Length: 296
Ligand SMILES: [Zn+2]
Image (cartoon, rainbow, N blue to C red; front, side):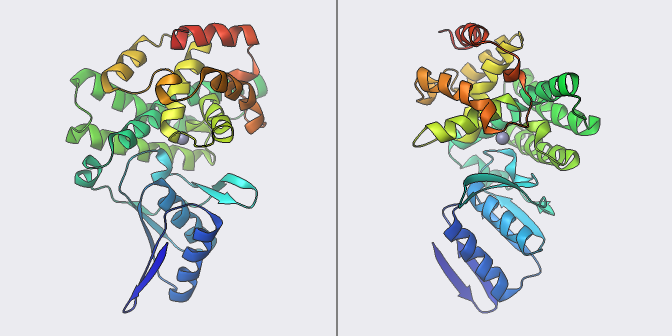
């Protein structure tokens, strides 16, 4: 990490979302009292700057250099605190600037991760409806529609046009989908429209793995399983995953099946207040769904 100060401008370079980085960014904001905090970089950089801007009551502008998750526009920051990695509610950015030429040069794995996080909206919405039916959770209909449209629009575009990942319109459609997802979360006042059982499995994997895989890849992979648990047809999804080289089994993502099974069992405990399909299924149903989803 380094801090550079030129004239009356200020800039701090961070590589992590840890406590040290938070302090460094906070210090710079306190010294310079800027009218606007701008975060440019990947997910961790945007998480840190969004979080610090919120804490110090400053507006925040996001300039993502990768499209790896819906955090670019969400009212949530994932940061490391003394209690471990936490998702903390913040203000959403006042604006987002996406330069498609920069995104096109980003690693393919980051684009795939963004696609996985967007596709997981399908699973999250179903869990939200399930929670409404079983425990009376209130659904914000507009947020639900926005979340669903953001992924359906992208899927239709990618499937209908058979476009390449680096096609300009594919990337624009992905950016718009992720931004709309963030807006859906802002409207709902929680991550519910875009985070269900597939996200809980990903949170459990984060705890079990020494080096967790990218968030979007974990939730996209878990969506195949959670959709199968709900007896949904996943053939369109698996065909798409194969076409774009998205990992479609835990082993493809470098995760042992036994670890993935442990993550499924641990998932509900990662967020006890979030009712999902995992609250309703037996061990036997889990094993059967694993076989169908991942061919094991
Ligand atoms: Zn996510």
